[in-house]
Image (cartoon, rainbow, N blue to C red; front, side):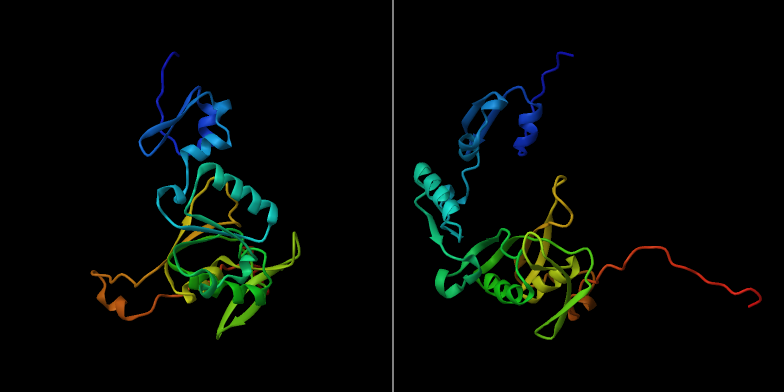
Length: 241
């Protein structure tokens, strides 16, 4: 139809699929301009340089030597002087070793742990985050297995692939995060993400007082309830009854 469209997007996948030309901005400057096919990883790094380019102190912790090497290569190439890279098992994270951080990211850290390890590692991770935690998780649709932790019953399921792990149900995961000191939890909505693998943003802080319902401020936050199994219910009737 000959209509020119100027569209502002943060989803670069859509831009590469539908645009004829892409212009990338970072901090108000044009850092990329070209055809969609030329928008490669180095170009994306210029557009989305990360927290370390904006003055934040960032510590990357990983137990995989090849991934560590790639991070170090990218750090040195981009001169990210405030990015520290630690080659260690992330499951051993402690505030004593690393200190405290305004924002902590658990990317697949809590997804592939057995029950005992999950209830051991998660509190240490929560202790490192003073304000916000970003957590990628895998949740079980049903909770046939029950585990007790500090007097609370959590439900989930045992999985064996790709490795043995205990996945909490969505309700149990949210209740667990509340028990770890997070007062608000939001889920990042991604139309291409699986419902069983949510990305959560958990925030610490005090509960906000409700001005229009002061009586509710005196009560604690209600726990999330486990989902009830959906299905047909059989109704039996006896003739003559």
